[in-house]
Image (cartoon, rainbow, N blue to C red):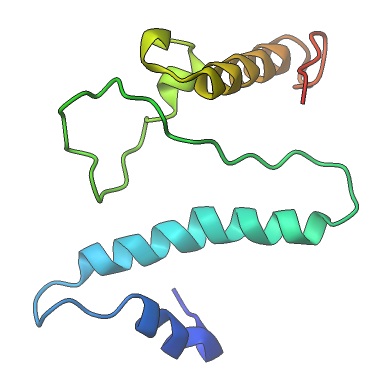
Length: 122
């Protein structure tokens, strides 16, 4: 990853931790750079264009006391939303987002267009 002129800002926000292995710090930087920064950049560049950019709350409490995802990238945490599973652990907002995600994916599988045939209320 090359941040060129932003290198010192990145190091200030994500300082090295001790003298040992820095992979956990690099992992946090890479996660933000690949996912959060690119989404935010796209949303800003879209400006007046009509496009969908989603960030969804991770309000799913289905992992209960399991803490293996705390402070780590936890791939697959979107699956309960996508497959509308364990709704009893969702908030109302989580259920609405889950229903929308499932509808978009189902529409896409049917027609290659996430907006048809079933419209999703925005």
